[in-house]
Image (cartoon, rainbow, N blue to C red):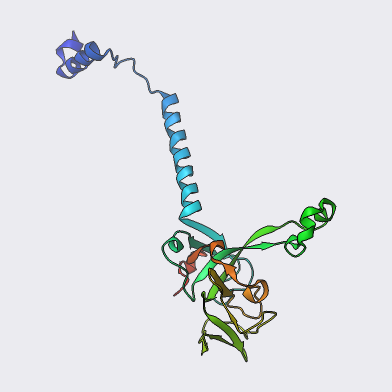
Length: 221
């Protein structure tokens, strides 16, 4: 027989006898292949979610408060793991959460359902600003210039004049907090309005521009 006399087929015949595999009738198992692809997709999604939750995240700049360093609609990559190994440094651009909503200013409303229903609920909003003061630093603004620990800061990135707004200065940054401002000093809602930022509210350090592609690269260049 041709099957038995052909050396290549003889090996197949031996495998057929030993394992019960019929090479002539074997067909691809589409169910198994589909299942494999589904598992690959699920694992990929889980890895992406873990990376986004604990390692990196992308954010979209909203507004003009960080001009001329960052512009509206730019997409940034945020390093979320770096501050697990050390505190933020002065001059770094960070993403952090701020709680907004009138219930913060009217605590009694939390216990009065009718009143609470008339007031916007608390809302966690992400902000992106530059770290100006660290715990223990004395912050002051004199004649449009920023002073940290009595030393005037040469801020080449600043747009507009720096004013105190409604914040009481000079002031010392408390423990576990930072003082932040936007680079566009005349058009920025920052620590001069909402006060010091808790370190545990910091989500990460902005490190790269992702979009537009022509501006891809470090935001500190």
